[in-house]
Length: 93
Image (cartoon, rainbow, N blue to C red):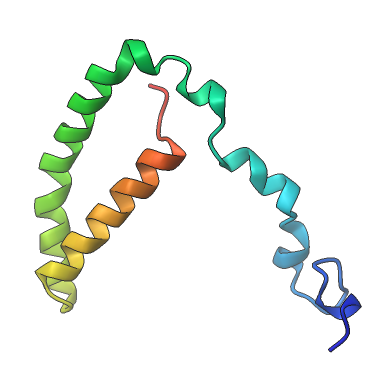
């Protein structure tokens, strides 16, 4: 396979892959301006995180058990999803 055929602009690649350009994905990563109000809002951010955890963990355990993979898998999934949401931000509301 040549280097030219592995590019995302190749006419043989799927349309969704040609539409996803790395420059378009950069705006999804956090930047410094996302954290400018952190000194003022860290207490409410922690309270919001604890509240979401109280609601999400039992739900994640139930999803793990009901899907047949076990409670531990649901718990791990909830922790990983929580970390991803914390890093990439959530709602500004």
